[in-house]
Image (cartoon, rainbow, N blue to C red):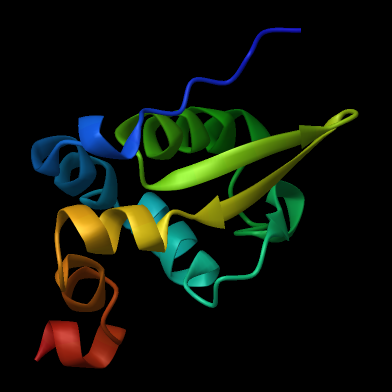
Length: 104
């Protein structure tokens, strides 16, 4: 099995994080993970096809937004809040803000 690439916290780039979170599906996934709980990837955004989510998980993981952990055939995800808050203080709070606040 292939190892999952996760950038070191010091290698996380703002442009990559913003590009990853700029897609509505990935932004919604990050909002779902904002509670800090580790979640099984199959229970996040159930209405999105699995093949599409695989692509979105890779983008989020390689940009440094999430951490993916394999357990057998399942993948579990967490938001890398500590790393992102350390690199870009306040960014996640702004980007993950309530949808209504963001649209007004």
